Picture (cartoon, rainbow, N blue to C red):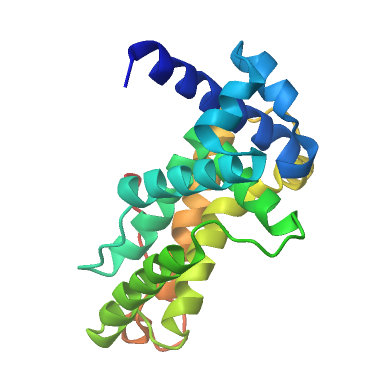
Length: 213
């Protein structure tokens, strides 16, 4: 593919990502994407089809990125909590992803980008959790698919509803506050998943927090 075509596609894709993140599928226009990308809107139709197809392709690409960056691998109890921490880190660096997912849910079309493949991907995540439960690494009181959903929720809701987090925390979000939020995510995940046999007789676990994860 000629270099100028690839460059134009990338500009359109990047501009669309910003527009969709800020305004959602229905609030974004092809004209505004083209202006932001400094490209002719006819190029968008030629390269991507239409606005809906572009939104779906961008969302799938962004989800593929997070899946590659934060794989589900559980070989010890602490891995679940560390997975929550790494998911939080990724979303802090890429807050637009959570907004895209929310916009998808609010679109009202019932269309889910690449649903069949994404469903398989999420089932594989749940299966990894279930395997760890069967091996006694994670508590099995919560179904595996619920435990995976709770992990995603713990890590992502800070970015899905930043206004609530801001009102609760108050003041500017400085490095200390970000570190505190991450510790909370990791500790909550650890408490959710820690096997019951790791708890003391009064039901309170002797847990330690690892700053790295």
